[in-house]
Every structure is written in C-alpha cells, then in structure tokens.
Length: 480
Image 1 (tube, rainbow, N blue to C red):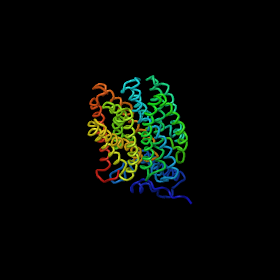
Image 2 (image 1 turned 90 degrees about the vertical axis):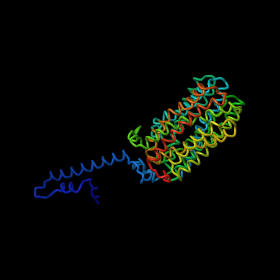
Image 3 (image 1 turned 135 degrees about the horizontal axis):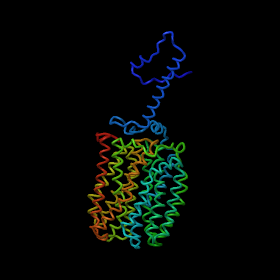
C-alpha cells in the first residue's frame, strides 16, 4: 500500500492556487512539473525539520524543564532508557574511577603539606601542581568528549586509568624536582583524570532518566568515599615510608583495581554518533550562558578549602594527622553531599539542588571559616563545605542532561566543563599568592584575605545560578 503524501506547510490560499485544474491540455510534462514541485516542497520541509532539530526548542515556564533544548534524538534516547539493569554495573565501574581520581585530587592538600615540609617548594607553587591536575578536566573537556564518541566509554576509561596510574608511579621518582612533579602529577595524572571524568559524566545518563540524579550521585559519591580513606592512607605512608612510597603505592593500587572496573563500563547501544565539537547556538540561550558562567566562577573557590585546610590547621597547632583528618572529614561530607544531592535532584529538581549547594558553599566560607580558629568550628566548616562541594559536582551533570538530553550531553557537558579551566588552574594558586602577599602561612589570621576571596566568588556564582533559575521559572516550588 502506498502511504499518503505528508501534509505540506502551505496556507489555504497557497493550497488553492497550487491545485492543478484539468482543462484538456494536461500533458506528461505538466504532470512531471507538479511532481517536481511537490518533491521540492517535501525537501524544504525536511530541511526545515533538520534545522529545527539542530536549533532545538527553548523551554518556557509552562514546559517541563527537562524538555529544554533537547533535540528529538535526545528525547527518543531518554524515553527508551532502562532506568537500571546493566546501568548499575556501569555506575559501579564509574564510581570506582571517581574513587581514585576524586579521592587523590581532593587529598592533594595532604601531599602538598608534606612536600612543603620537605622543602620542595612553597604552598602556592605546590597548590599550582594540584590545581593543574584538576584543570586538565576542563582544559581537555571538548577533546575528551570527542574521544569518548570515537573510542567509546570502555577504551576511554581504561586509557584514563592507565595514565593516572603511570602518573602517580612516575611522580614517586620526582619528589625532589618541582619540574618533574609538574610533568608527572600535573600532566600525566591530569590527562588521565580528565578522561575518566568525562566518561563518568556522560555514560550513566544513557541508562537512567527518572533515577538519573541518584545514579550520578552514587557515581560521584565514589570520589568522596575515596578521599575519606585516601587522605588517611597518604598521611600514614608519608609518616612511615616517605612521600615517594606514597605516590608509588597509589599508582600500583590504581592500576590493579581501576583497569578491571573500567572494562565493565560500556555505552548503551555502542558509542554515540559523533557530533560537532561545539554547538555555538547554545550561547544564544540565556540559561545556558548563565549556567556556563556560574560554573566558570564557582570552580575558582571550590578547591581552596581542601587544599589549604591542612596548612590552616597547622597554623594554630593542629598536627599533620589532624590536618589529614580534616581533609578526610571534608571528603566524608562530600560523599554524603554527592549521594544525597543526587537523590534530592530527582525529588526537588537538579537546578534547585545545585542552587542549594551554592548557598551552603557561600555561607560556610563567609560566615563560618573566618571564625574557625579552633578545631570545633573548623570541623563544622569542613563538614558543611564538603557537603556543598560534593553536591555541586554530583548535580551539575544531571542539570546539563535534563536540559539538553543524553544524546547531546557529551557536547554540552564538554562546553560547560571547559569553562572550569580557569577556576581549576588558578583558583587555589590565587589563594596561595594572596596568602604569601598578605602574611605568613604560620599565622592563622593571614588566611582571612584568601578566605574572603573564595567566599566572594562563591556568592557571585550563587547569583548567576539564581538568574538561570528565575529565567526558567519564578515559582518557588517549581521543580527545575
């Protein structure tokens, strides 16, 4: 049976004008002309449809925020997800990766304090080593999004784990060279971390929709759990065997556990189709632009507490073990922030949860940390700030996925994460340079300018997130 022709986009007047009238002179040539005209109309309709797909609709307040800028391919992919099944195996594999790359990068403050005490370099320079590792996540985001689509999630994850392990192993032979530390810990480790981050950011969304927030929360909770244990392990090995052995043991452990779990990660239905590197039309939407700027600003202060709390604690007499304990407390709180934030995103809305995390981050930095000159308030600060920090990272992939859909997630997430480069690379070093310029790292009051620098940027990021929220909906109880 021949399917009836698709309706053409014509007005009533155009339809009447285009109706062929038989006057006895209808020839084969005129018939071909009509057919050609109809085919041309269908071609134009197809081209318009393709343009509509590329420039996906902008969400209005009456629409579901999940409709957002999703193209039909994203909507189709999201509607067919299993919301479980093998997806939980993928989540377990991704959580193992975040255990290592999140745990080691967030625990850099322990290694930084140990290397400062050994005289390798000052705090600001070593903070730059750690921040460069994290900055690689953002610097290579667009490239890594492409790599994931070409190689697939499994091969990309295994390559990332391999580079992380080799980077830690090589760093063990460069504990007396600041240049070698940059080359191994910042570059090799950084590229591996960035590959693993992209895999864990985009792969779980292929398997989940209604439970997407929870799945991402579990994945990123691995980083908080890793930091909790790794901080103590780092300090214990530093005290007993030395810094070199700490890097060596961590590298071997990463390769031994990370590679098998990375092998379990795979794309649903094979690697996603390769899209453009950047979709510039997204910047035409106010919400994408403000979310982009929010992430750019928010990442400047995010790593300042975890990098400087060990030194800050030592400035009023807390030993290195106590500093490691504070980092572990930060990571433990981050674990619950990631897990709880992911679950709340499914209930309250991902963007609402993201805003709550930024509120907690700004309040803890501006109203609690400046007055934490003893162990008790400092513990309160690291717990609240750690929870806020973890929630930010757990909810951001869900926010992006809900707005742009899983089919466009790697490109959109790559663009958003690229904005984090400056904050990752310079956020903590700027705090270190402010500390060096305004006082002595052994004086607790010298840290106040750095604290207010971090807190002020946190407040600015909060304002930008609220602008995104208000553009979508001004209703307080609206799930966004």
